[in-house]
Length: 391
Image (cartoon, rainbow, N blue to C red; front, side, top):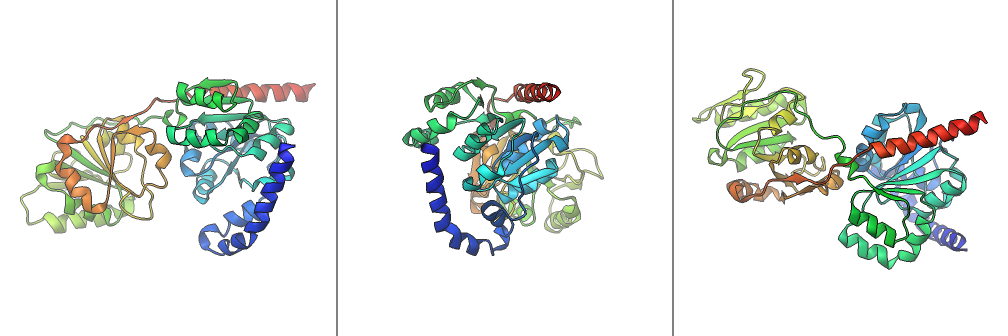
């Protein structure tokens, strides 16, 4: 009875939303996503008997990469919710779809070997229909924070119905396991946060200069100027690593123009392969983690402009740097949740933060995750599917 009431309510809400959806679909940002999700335009069902992953946005999709790399691209189906998630998914696998609105799922979903859903994508019809089609359903990297848990408990009746159709859960922590069990989850295994399964590696050892080393990492246009305006030599030595290599010369010209008449020393890493100088421009690719490894403070680019949406904080956190970022981190929120003691500031506040470097705390990362249990689960279902075909 519940599933019929849920479907009818969803269908009623869908009818009410159609005028808004049609209007919204005219905007460039949603021109492909809304027609695909709510009208099935260019969004056919996946081929059946594949390994089906579902995630929401860019951060969740990117976190799947170490798992996806263990399998052949053509045997993977990957559905997403957001535009950025779709773009990221296309870099990883061949078969990508927007997940349709729930009323379409009974007709859209085909039987798969296994369905693995990332984090909090708890769509009732998704799990119900997949389960009814004979697909094993798995929730991975499951987490419920303190604030969300209160909301989950208010709607516990709904989540009990959802968890009835989830066969296996891989949770991030023991606390998450207990909360999931209280909501009706079963067969739960704690494996940590899989977003931390692939940690940064150092490929070259640099000698660290004496004193404080400040690295501005993955910076974008206008961010270098902001950083140079906020920095002075008393705060520490400055390393600048632009995000895009085509901007190396542009950033170098900015540094030269600003400091050529000063007593400060500055050079490009490609010309003098060391970090000894008041200002160093890193104009070589693949050096960022090597630089983070000897840095004391990281000003993380991408968060001080409106368009980039921040950059990966896991890398500087792994090396125990003090981490400062702008507040525009909409593309990296899920990764910022994995680190502790970072600082988000307005552009006008950056100088104040640099002036008080001594009192800032070092950033650290949470519990790392183990993806092997997930891979084993997938291989087990693949093996069972092959046996069934042979019979």
